[in-house]
Picture 1 (cartoon, one colour):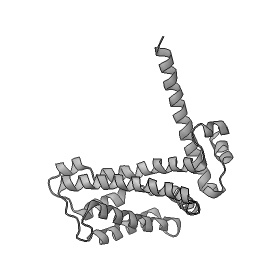
Picture 2: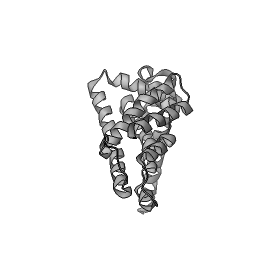
Picture 3: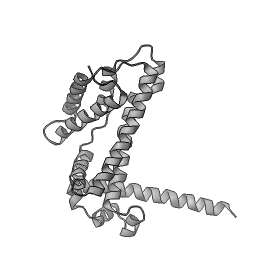
Picture 4: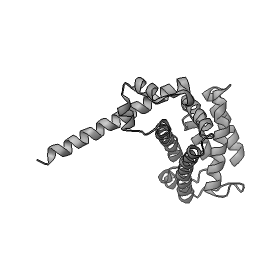
Length: 210
């Protein structure tokens, strides 16, 4: 008698996850086409093929939906960081890697998504006009930086890598990498191809950490 209710709850949970993912995927396309500030909940529902009821069962607002997108995209970027600074790989290496090599590996593998950059740029401009939204965005960015710093700290401890004198701690290195990335990546919206942006990113980061 107990098995059927548990099975049904699991099915409902899976269906809700699928609905949420479809809404997020649809929102990506709508945000790219219209911009965050011009998008309405109806636009996302129409693109996803759902009613407003389905939307509100998953999100309370477009801002909340954006932060769900932000967290999903951040996981992709964090995966690239974790792969470049895997403590297990560092411990198994025959020699201590140079910080330049680690940074180069990350810069050559980190995802560069022009559509997401366009959406994020729109949202940053929007958030700047609303202090509560800006505070939420800052909190999400702080959590992402903390994850990167934690990974770098573990990597430095496992590998014995020597950080440059100008960036003596993993937190300093993480801030420098993020700052350079934020500055260079916007050229993808303007006049550079992905390959050019990646090469530019590698060149600047190499100069910073050398």
